[in-house]
Image (tube, rainbow, N blue to C red; front, top):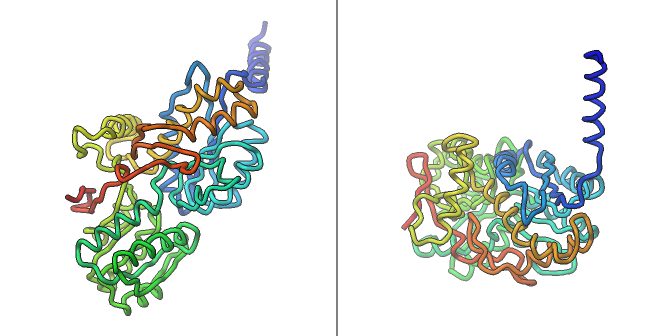
Length: 385
């Protein structure tokens, strides 16, 4: 047989293999995350973490299809529909941001496919209703983290605070949750400003914040865009305390913020400071294992808390697979419903960011063990006493 005919035959066999239907034993997990756009500093470590996940669970092959939604809500919804209709996803992980994840909720409910969000807003899973029944989330709720910030402010004599946050559902959630806990602590919000993820200037907002002369400023943003208000405040001479949310807990924020973010205070997941956790902390081993595996694949100092959320999402899903298999085979409605039910009934599941106990009313399941107050000192994360 000629070389050209051999090559043609091999190409034909490869094409048939690619076109062949997937095995009934294959669990298909669709992933839509923000690998480009303003939220890329979240989505890139999430993509890298998907590469670390096991490809076999409970005797079943697990296949991940990863799509980029470019930090765009419409694209995230389109990706989700494609993953369900064309790739027959049994579950969806994503998206990286609250606005995109909020838009994906009706699709999950309509298709009866469980969605595990990588975004922070508690509004994704609360109040529980028929649509949110199909939605879970692995990042800490903004309500949990807002309470930690208010506690720290009150303990350190902060009486007035200005808020500057994203002008989307992430900012909405943080403003709502922080207002409640700040009021309870007797802390007055003296200015409220908003900005877009893609903004290149926030001078107007910063001037209004400074005119209010707050003791502290809380910036409710995520990823590298959250550095812009703080850098601008610093350039304008603001000397009060700076607080950020757990949405900035990665090295890209340190790189972009530079000296202007020194001394920033924020709550973060334990994985950010895994090596400094107490030896008796039940989260430490899981967090350290993830950090070591991630940095072995991507280089020293490359780990980010956002990637750990993707890793935790898969861990939650994997924990539900054995129970789901009792109800049906992968690719069936019964299996997908079994996944949903299994994820809803986890007890003390150890993740890189905390220990989750989920219930029909609580599709996150974290408590105070899922947060650590940290600061930035000499360009590095440091736990606070």
